[in-house]
Amino acid sequence: MDVTTDDAPTARFDAFDASCPSRQLLDTIGNKWASLVIVALGVAGRMRYSELAGRIAGVSQKMLTQTVRSLERDGLLTRTVTPSVPVRVDYELTPLGLSLLETIRHLKEWAEAHMAEVDRAREEYDRKDT
Figure: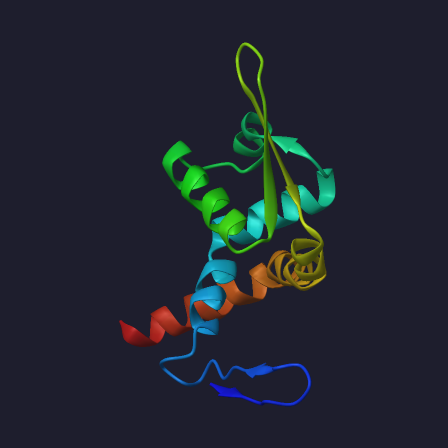
């Protein structure tokens, strides 16, 4: 990591460097649950925890909780608790999270559009191994 000392300090990050902290961020946003949370919130806007859990099939309560905490820690979403019975917890993308939305949405759409081709490639590859 290289930091310049001009008027405003600017950090330079290189994810190819083993010690670069951007690797942790890439690990977070590259996680399938994080990507799906970001897209779900980007499409729906503010969502309750239960709505997120219902929208993302297969995610466990533990994994969804870990995911939203990680995204909140990284400043990609906000968590708002409304005192009520039961307590209401809402999540919403921050401006930083919204800046990432299009990139992740495109990856999701690419995966959906090309899954048949990937399946064929996998089958072809697996046939070579047998």
